[in-house]
Structure formats: structure tokens, C-alpha cells
Image (cartoon, rainbow, N blue to C red):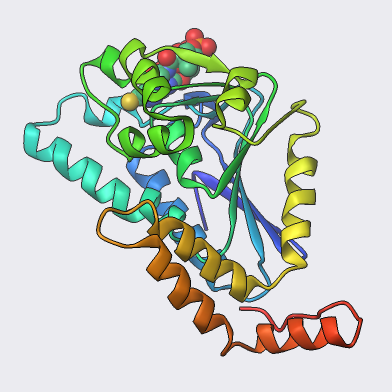
Length: 259
Ligand code: COA
């Protein structure tokens, strides 16, 4: 069904693997479209409570947007490339109701780091290297990198990373808050699956409301506190809330009906 990615489902978790190792999993047009379709399908699947995104091979998560596809683009085509990619993949993943964990297993550069930053949080293997090298190519990050990097690491560090086009290692990424954990490459997927299964014990309906409220605080056209009040109120009308509170009062583990 997919040519550039693989999707595996194990109980309540889905793992999406970008599978173009000979191009270090660079994001071409087809891969972006397939990722959109896979995320959409997993989000709709009532059994899937968390999604892990990773790259195939031991070298790269994603080494960037596929440079060979846009090297000859005009001003208009460049603008369209960024707008379409942001809508189809990067904003789409950020706004997904189902939690997405990036398992950064190697190079995450340019569009690769931007994709990892669109995920709800990140875990890196100790060989991972991250950066936004776009200005070394005469362009700037166009898939949300100028916005999401300062949100995660602060404006000064983001400016330095963007201006130098340099790479940081996994430990520095951890120190700056870009990734939440660093583990060995062998442990990476199991570690993310453990986090995913911890997440899957909780109310997926409540989690989807929390994602919306957190994201609202980072958008200039919305008020995060107002979004939180709205999402909080909406939780009271859900079967998950009824089950969660009843289970607590009955001193048993909640069994959430789910999405
Ligand atoms: N777009 C298209 N192809 C890419 C790519 C990208 N972003 N990143 C890597 N590749 C391809 C290479 O062209 C090469 O293909 P080939 O074997 O057909 O020539 C293959 O992946 C392996 O990459 P290579 O450069 O040989 O590996 P390396 O170990 O020497 O270097 C990197 C690894 C990540 C440092 C290097 O590939 C790189 O700098 N990539 C581009 C990173 C970048 O600027 N990304 C931002 C894009 S906006």
C-alpha cells in the first residue's frame, strides 16, 4: 500500500517508519503524502492510542527535505512547497488527536528536525545529530522550523542553530529541551513503546483535548487559557470522564471506552 513508509500496529500502538534509507529517508513529495495518509488512518483507528515515528536504518531519522526535488524551484514554487508541506504533514501531525512520539534514530536535519518537532515530543538515540542546515543551502527552514525550534529551545539557541547551520548531538539536544530522553539505539523503539503504552492507559479523549489546549497557547490567533477552559469543559460530556471518575470512586482501574 505504501512505497516509502512502513506502518506496523501492535496492540494499541502504531509505528510508522520512513523507509528510504539509501537517501537517508529524505522527505520527497510522495513520502509526505504517504505520511499524511498513514497518520490520518492511524488517527481514525479506534484501537490506536499512540503513534511512534522513526526512520529506517541506523544512520538517519530524516536527513531533510529531498533537495533534488526543489533545487530548480521558482519563488512561487518555493512558497507553494512550504505551504503544502506544512498543511499536509507538519501542522497535521502537530494537531493530530492521537499522541505522536518521534523516535529520532540518527540524523534529523532540516525537514527531518522540523518533522520531529511537529511530533508531540521526542526521544533520541545517543548517535542522533540534529540541526537546521537550510541557510547553508541559501534557503531558510520552511516546514515550521523557525517557529517550533524557538518554542522548544528558546529564541537565542534557535537563532544560533539556524544561523550556524550546525548540528548538535543528542546530549546537547537533551540539555536544550529539544528531546526529552536519550537512550541507546538498541533501546530506542522499546523505550518509546513503553511511553506509548503508559499513554494508552489514560483517556485518549482527554489527551486529545489536552493536545488542543497546549497547541492553542503557541498560536498567535488563539488564546491558550480560553482553549483550555473550553477543552476542560468538553471533557465533562465524555464517556471517558464518566468512566475515569467512577473508576476512581469505586477504587478500580479505569477502562476507557476511547476515541
Ligand atoms: N535530499 C536528498 N538526498 C539526500 C539528502 C537530502 N536532504 N540527504 C542525503 N541524501 C542522499 C545523498 O544525496 C546520498 O545519495 P546518493 O548515494 O544517491 O548520492 C545519500 O542520501 C547518502 O547521503 P551522503 O551525503 O552520501 O551521506 P553522508 O554520510 O556522507 O552524509 C549527511 C550525511 C546527512 C551529513 C549528508 O547527507 C547531508 O548533509 N544531507 C543533507 C542535509 C540537509 O542539508 N538537509 C536539509 C535539506 S533542506
